[in-house]
Image (cartoon, rainbow, N blue to C red; front, side, top):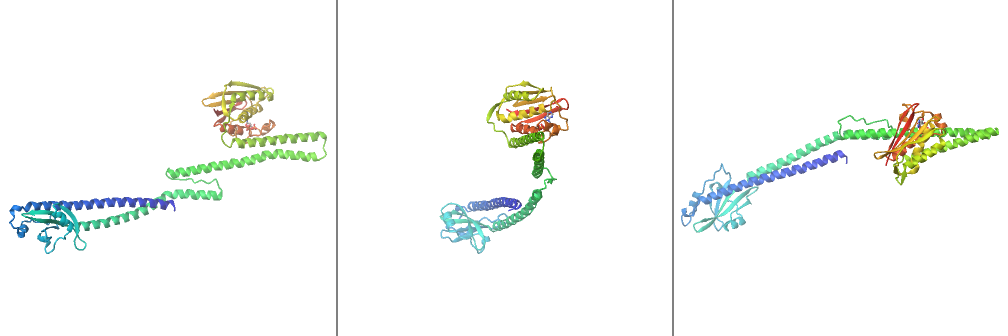
Length: 461
Ligand code: ADP
């Protein structure tokens, strides 16, 4: 069932419960108020009769006409429909008020029995078709006789009022329910319209695979706007991911194709009759390209691995130890360049030695590769709050500001031929970034062309 109808049904049901409860309470309170009012009236009048009929003022034996004459007058304006009737022990009506005419009040055996036993009782007794009377019975001791005084009031006006009230409440509840359901359904439909629009757009994006489309919701800033904006951001993000994935595949294919082309050319050459010297040169070139392809493939695998999630912190790694090892390795490869250690604090963290070594060697290889002969590469390791801060600074060629935002992208190189000549694959810094992020950290660069660059990596300890 659509949410629109479910909501409408729910609040109609709640409204029905509230109206029924309110109506029920109103009905019961009013009925008991009106009945109490009748009872008070009966009690007051009964007391009045008892006070008027004094035993010693009546003849002996009793004369019912005298009693009738002494009955207090019923005030038809103050208490309309109030009747009096007196029965003797044989349930025979001996006295009754004039307004009863030829009729008599209905006789209820329980009322008679309880009344004669001495307790004053009030009861509702049916009288004829569609009518009820409220009767109060009490014993009347006159001279040597016990009579039963019945004071009664018709409940017809109250019954008519209550019946009208019942119909009025029923009609009001029905009208309120119909109005609330119709207007509620309208309001819910209007409130949910943007959600329907969003899902229509989402479906059409899915059908057309067009990630350039957006919901672009215009409306009050509420939960729906929030949903639409989140949806747009998600599509934006997915679109970027797909775009970068596409570029990455194109770049990787391109990078792998050039060594393959060189190898293919050399293999063709080897099939021909060529001098021994050319043959050696071709073989060397094939070897070099195979090595290059191997490096690219290895770097691609490593990148895929480091980008797959946070590192498993399985062993304690001495960062200071790795820095010192790396200095030793770099010194043997760096020719006339000086590799020096700046500040070195004895920091350790739990992680993966191989990957951390890889991170540092990528930075140091770059520093050596892009620093001229006799330049200096400085490594330092310090604690920065809950981070280990690793720095590789050189005084080499530096990087111009327009390239800085891109150098951590895969296969991005400022000078492709220089990178290739130095054995770079264009993936080194992307791997560094991936490893730093595996440790919840980041990598930053500051650089000035001609003066050198400093790469700083933060790793959480
Ligand atoms: P590569 O394998 O080409 O070195 P990287 O991802 O490691 O690829 O680096 C990307 C590019 O950033 C390099 O091609 C180079 O232009 C620039 N770069 C990296 N490190 C340095 C550095 N220390 N000094 C100057 N340029 C650098």
